[in-house]
Image 1: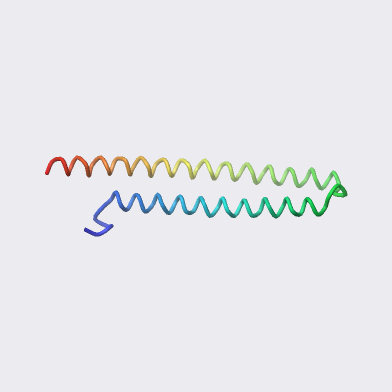
Image 2: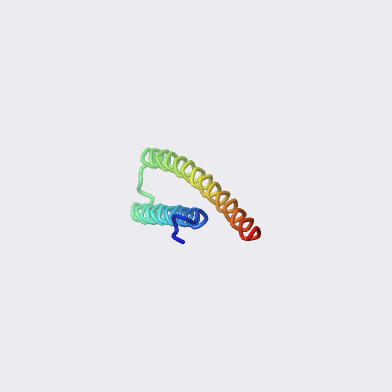
Length: 98
């Protein structure tokens, strides 16, 4: 039986891809945060207050977008988990009927 014939395997593969994508995105944001922290350490106390405020506003906007994307990803993962549970139940019912 191929993966195309087993919907629960297809749902599981889709879930694994979504989780891998989330992990990659998280790694990307972590690298950016570490780079920004390094830049901030290099600039030290000499960084001007206006620049700080502007950068804070940019970072807050980015953070808001990231949180929104993360919420959407969580929703998608939960939908996939629900589908997977349903498919597992269906397979179990079919196996019991045999």
